[in-house]
Image 1 (cartoon, rainbow, N blue to C red):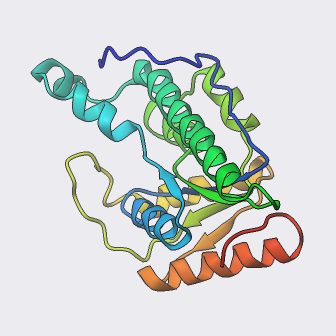
Image 2: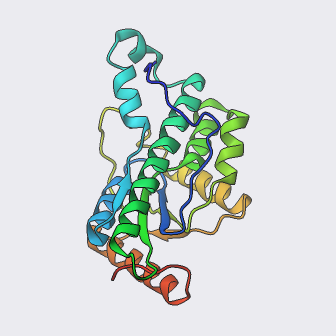
Image 3: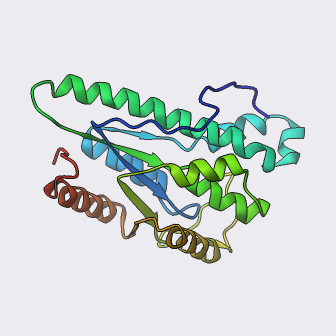
Length: 216
């Protein structure tokens, strides 16, 4: 297991009035990372990486770690790393928004490639259980927009993904979980450009409602 010690052991999520949080979640290999990168570029903003990837790459550098795979004991360290990365990005983007807009109110979007809710869903799928601390945090975290990716992107192996034949079933689990906990979400699909265009329309619509003010 990676020995990096991270702060924020209580998994508390940091918010800032100048930062609008958009989270992209869903089944593996459905374009989540690409969408976050494209949106961050389109808005001159930033995005939060999926911490599990560097975590597992470090863990799997040893034969013992590779053999162990990902287990129940990895869930909280991954959760801590994920929210730490999100909180850092939130603070950095808040400074950018404040610096660029000293004379008028403005908010910038932060695009999160996964969240603790997704980790909770996968914990139940793979481990059959979820640490209570992780579940409590996952259900308390809030985002201004939640996107669930459709299954219209072909599955591609990357050394970490392992469920090419279970995507439909896992997608249904995501939908059920989101509906069960009353989380408002939008399904996002289409080509790479179509996805970006659709999200920009949704964000612009929310801006008109006074929820956020975003660059066009």
